[in-house]
Length: 294
Image 1 (spheres, rainbow, N blue to C red):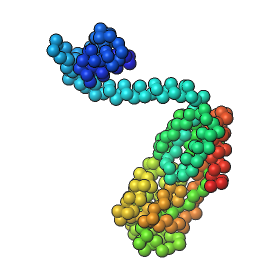
Image 2 (cartoon, rainbow, N blue to C red):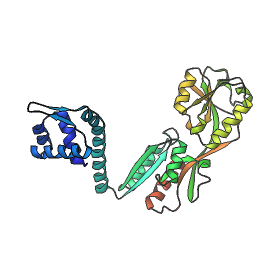
Image 3 (cartoon, rainbow, N blue to C red):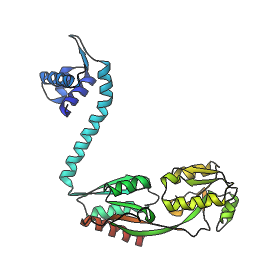
């Protein structure tokens, strides 16, 4: 089974005409017949019912078409991209990060990098910290934006700190605690608390959240998949959120108040030491300068 057979099948399934399919693919009608017959023989399935008057899909043909149309589309897109990259780019740079809130200067970084390294193709992927760490460990990512503690135990990894962060409360502006300049843990007792999902959070965040839960045993606890969902829950009056300040988006309806917690989160960029490609160092240097100057 190859692409030409699948193209013939998909076009014939849509046109139900051998002559029209041949015309669309710039081949002869006997070639279309040969491709379909060969495909049916390989699959050991009857995909079409052919009579002198019409062509119809069999139930198996309908099922095969529904699945194969998407696969063929994706395959053709992948081939086109690969050809473009082979023609225009000399190398690739894959970058993992968790969201635009954390890496707020990423557009400036990408713009500067593209100007300095125009022949490097950039691949960006948003993933939670566990997926990101796994992909980075397996060298599917060249660089990741991450909290330091997430990669401390990985061998042969370099890390550049971009900023540090403290924990804060995000709460409605009309909440009684919104007038505080700092919130003590004692103030959180008996409050409904919204915490980041520990299965999707780095260990230092999970550790702080566990400490808060132990000190506030009577609090109702909600878990959110991320800051944006937490904000929705806050506005829905489900509770107040505790999270590092660097993941808190600006929102005119909410107040961000520091919590009396000493833990500091280091956030930066990590890369593999053994990757000596010049564009890796270039990306790190550009990122460092942009965070320093903005």
